[in-house]
Length: 167
Image (cartoon, rainbow, N blue to C red; front, side):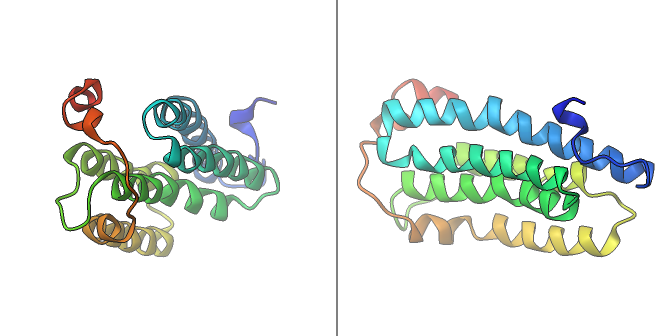
């Protein structure tokens, strides 16, 4: 059995098995293509923020474990909200209070909002509506996150350095 198939069950409808598989795939993509690179970038440029993407790795692993124990709804909800929540917190720490959200992090958070359509099926209407409502809240609360999370960081690298070109 591969990691991608953890939590699938022959007794589940095919659409649910597919969503569980997608949840595991998204968790692995978040670990290897988002969280680990952000751990490295954070360690090099913003050491106090290293724990945020590190936490993301642990939570993604936990979602796969939840699928193993057949807690697939919890695992999918976590995968829906983990990336946008951590992106908002991370971006909030990078930007100064009462300044606009960094455009790069706003775009990252916005792109993460589409994860709900990957891991929640249209047949799960109540879950989709509730998750979509909370996702809208997270998108609209980017400025609030920006004002709540403050830390003194040398952010010149995201304004003028290499990271300015990437974000």
